Image (cartoon, rainbow, N blue to C red; front, side, top):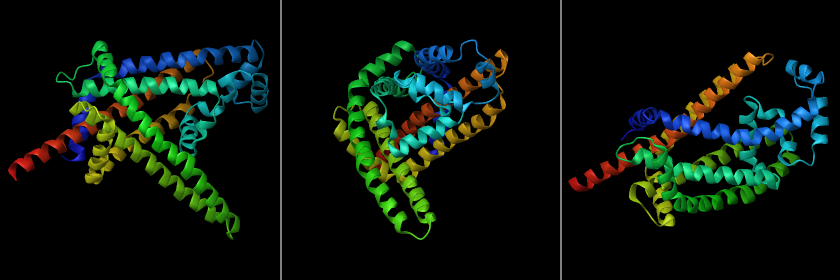
Length: 325
């Protein structure tokens, strides 16, 4: 099976389950609301009925921002609020945190929220793959959570295993190569050498992170398709499958990834054009943000669906070939 056939079939399956898109969007909004209320309360206390609210609609005020952070310095995750959570800045901020492991430096409140988010994603991954692999391929909330519960324990073990590999990258590779780049940059005749080395390291780091993520995607897929019980065994077979079909697995993964970047760029271009100075424009900006969230959900579902197609298609071809031989 080729990557484009796997992608086409995957997109058809995703588009057939639009209810799942909107269910995941609603969950995302509810989780966001839990985080929004403390921030809203802090902003209301800081701005109140002052003229600062009107000034902020015309542009960001860094003097007010410094005062805001100082005033709420002891209030957990509110102190981590910054202009980068708005618009496309979120993407670049998350990219930096992902490449450098900066999220390990967050406080306990943020880490607890991240843990809840991870557990939800583990549950939802089982529901998504279970729906896509079921004979009906039809989304129902009961079926979704039934599949999620069925695979939760096994997917959690896969998460622990992937966490060990991510930990090796962040706690060993990042400090070692960062120190190496600093030493080379300190003795080089030009700062350009350190910049080029840093860029190369960033590219290699992202390649390894995406490779680990892809391997454990296929480990999840193998678990669902074959109802595997040993996650160590499924991970080993997933590694073998990825490297045996390296061109196809990587090609499909990066092609879908590029689609996600295209959606991000479109959002980043349009979002700043919406001046949120009236309630109608604020509503329009909110709607546009949810459209973008739907696009991100679509991309994630397409990853699972297309990779599932590729795996099953190549396994079927392998069996036909073995039978013919």
